[in-house]
Every structure is written in C-alpha cells, then in structure tokens.
Image 1: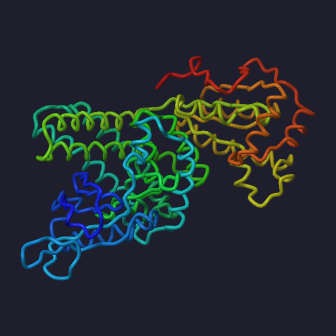
Image 2: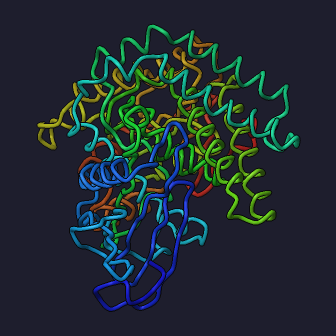
Length: 502
C-alpha cells in the first residue's frame, strides 16, 4: 500500500498515518484505512473475519454523520504471482476502508494548533451532536450499557493501564502511587454518589448509540463546515453511552489543548440545544473519564515498538498530563453566579463568552431560553411581559440546579427589572455562593449600530430589533444598586476582581 502501482487510479503521493489500531494511506483524492492485526482486549482485530466485520461496521456507523467521506469496503487479495491487489474475490488476505481524502490541515485539531480556528464551529457542532443523538434514539441496549458498573469498569481500565505501564517501565512518568490512589478514590466516590442518577438516565432515554470518540482530531472542515468522522466501531461499550458522556469528550479535548473558553462555549451551547441540565451532576466524572481514556491511549502508543525513544517519552509525558487533568476534574469547584445585564445590543453575549472560560462557567442566555419555551410565538409575543416572566423563571430554575451541583453560572439577559436582579441575588444567597452583577452601560447610538449590524449578519440568536430597543429605552432607568459594576465595553472580562484563576 506504499507503492503507487497498487492503486487503480492516479496517485499524487503516498503518506501514511498511524494510530495504535490502524494505518491510513493518503493518495491524493482518496484515502485507505487498514486495521492492524492487534488485540488489546477492548479492541480485537486479530483475525481476517474480525477485520472484515469491523470495516463494515465502520462504514455503516460513520455514514450517520459523514456519508460523503465513507465510500466502501474493499478486499485486498493476492494473485497467483504473489502480487497484492486492491479488490478481487479470491485469496483475500485483508480488507480496507476506502474514503474521500481531505487536507490534514483542515482537521480542527490542526486548525486550533495553527491559530486558524473559528469559535462558531463549536456552536455548529453543539447543534449537530444534539441532532445526531436525537436521531439515534434511545438504544435497545441502554439498560445494559448505561449501567454505572460499565463506566466504573472503563475508568478502572484506564487507571490499570497507567499503573501497569509504570510498573513495567519503573519510571513513574505517568502517575505516582499517591496520584493513582487519589484518582481511584475520587472516581469511586463520584460513581457511588450518583448511583441513582445513572438509573434515571437509563429510564429517561439518555443512553444512545453515539460516537464514542468525539475530539477535535476526529472533526474536519468540509465545504467550510465542521464534519464529525471516525466513530468507535470496535466496541459497543464505548459507543452506546450517555449522551452527555459523548459530548464531554469534545469539551475535555478543548480544555486539554489549553482552550477552556472553547470548552465552556461548547458546553453552554450543547446544553441549550439538548436541555440536558439534569445530567450536570455527572459531567465532572464524564470529563475525568474522558481525560483518562486519552491517557490510556497515550500509554498504548508509548509501548509501540515501532516508535523511537524520543517519541515514546513524548507519549509518556502526554499520558501524565491527561491523568493530571482527570484528577483536577474531580476536585471541588467554587460555584459563583455572574449576571451580565444591559440593554439589547450592548454586547452581553460577547462579554459572557469572554468570561465563560476564565470562570469555567455555564452560560444561560435569555434569548435561547425564550425560544425554547415559545418556539411558535410571534415576534410580538416573544417579548411580551408574560413571556419575559416565564423566561426568567425558567432561567432561575436552571441556575438553581447548576449552582447546587457546584457549577458556576453566567446569566446573559437584560435584567432591566430590579426585581429580577434581586431574585438572582436571593438564588445565589440560598446556594451559598457569591453573586457578581456586571452592567454594560453603552450609549444609545452604539446600541442601535450593534443591533443593525447583527441583523445584517443574520447569525445572532437574538430577535430583539430596534423596535424592542426603543421600547426598552422608553422606560429604562440606570440601575442604582451599590453592588453593580458598570462597564463601558464588552471586550474584556473583569476577572481580576473576582476570579480564583482555577
């Protein structure tokens, strides 16, 4: 497969990519994926029949999200002269997956590393992933695979890989004994604490046949939009999982790459689309598990005899970083409530996005909540007093549940009424957390310019136009509460005053 004449089509050049389980040969317009003859226990490609079966599974499952990429499964045969052929029906020695090739530079992992990344791709991905989970529907195997014991088994497998690797290498480069004990104890405590919630997730249909490996290295740009590929085909236990567990992988990957801003932007948008706030008590455990999975894979790659010592050491260091992140996810968080208020067009959503990564907070947008609870309302009804009351009530219910679970929250809404601001203070006090009120104090001309600009782009969730702004300004009174911090622009989150920098 490294030879040009092996392929029945023009080949520009041949590059080979490797993982612990496969080789991918890039030929120009097409790529061919070959499964390695390996058996890791959780993954078994050790026989021809198994490789054929899992090639077919990979084709079928990935066409759910990336039909354009996945073309067909082809046999590799040997002729009477001992030459290998792509195709044929006799003397088949292996199988490969034929795919449409895309530029490696368009992987979102590469785009992020090259500082050529559009954060709005995370908004698109949040919507696509929720739609994918909805289309999948509750899995018939959810009663089996959604059990708490399955996640416990997979967490233990990652930790054992780290422990066995260190014992074999006598290095301690991945985790020392104290770290291993602490991470094991914290994981077990979280599993036990949420035992009833696991059963509830099964009962409410949150266990779906998902992707299982949702990280930036498995997402590419195609036609200028993000496209998810390479789901897990080799083990149903890793793919038929809690939907929030599936999404948590992408969030963890963004954080692991040094971008909590992208991680919490994605989380906030995913929760808006899915409405799955009730699953948030499990998110820290899911994130920790996902970091452990990446640590385990790095350990496996470090043990590959085909790599040199320098690359092996890089993989050990990578595993160490992932397991350290897994531990941090299970540490106690400091919940806070942040309110970003101001007239329509003042830049509240922009400021909230600036702050979500710094504070590791979930954004709750009134515009998104309003549309969820009034999907069929007219524009006038959408901003009626009754709808506004309903919107804030729903926002406050979500906020209360998140604060009680320990997650910081940023509320993005006008908060023009003082009673709404006071209700938010009461919620924070009841949860025993700090409440910080930020107010964007922007002149009217700038507000009108901002609203006209976002309307012309047609990509903002808000439907508040100039007519809504005019109604607001007719009755607007600048807040006078002493605890409000006034800001004259939305370009900088004033975190130095209250963030712990955690």
